[in-house]
Length: 234
Image (cartoon, rainbow, N blue to C red; front, side):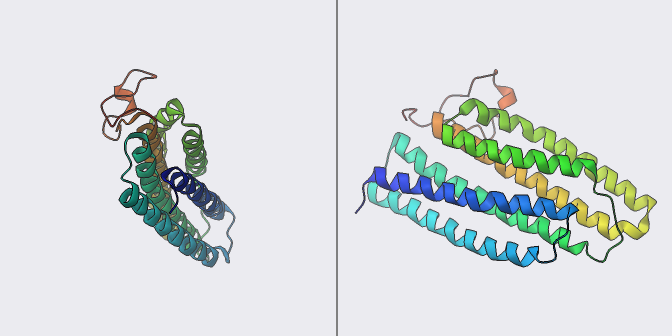
């Protein structure tokens, strides 16, 4: 039987591997909105199946370590963080598939201009995901808290995109179906940012033991994290 430290290190490697599978899926899905690829959807579904299996394996390993070693303090936080992050990453992969499905549904429909805000929101979501993973790798609480604050900006862009596409449907009824597909894509991208924010909050928990899910970062002074969690020893 491997030691607890070896098991935790294995979990870390498995989580990094999962990140390496999820991020390209989001990139491909976003690109497909403006550069349609008729072969992409089948590939996305196949990749999602692989991710689902890897995510289940991480969960099983987490539960095994909890049962066998009954870890405490910092070790417990590491395992719980991996358990939570693998779920967020799996959901991000699902949403990437959803975006690709929306892009695929535009084939044969009247051409419609992709709102600038949609591209900007997609770029922000990808940047937030990369930054959240870097915050996890670096144990960087300040960066993680900053990511939480950026989610509000994504929400605002999402609303502006929906308003623009609603106006497009009113002015050009023949493009209603295409506009609806883009509205759904915008909602999926907004949810990707939400799950990325959850990852950032998991990083804060990992490093400090504090749960900031309902205590938003703008409720605490800059550079401070609410206290009151598990033992803060690493």
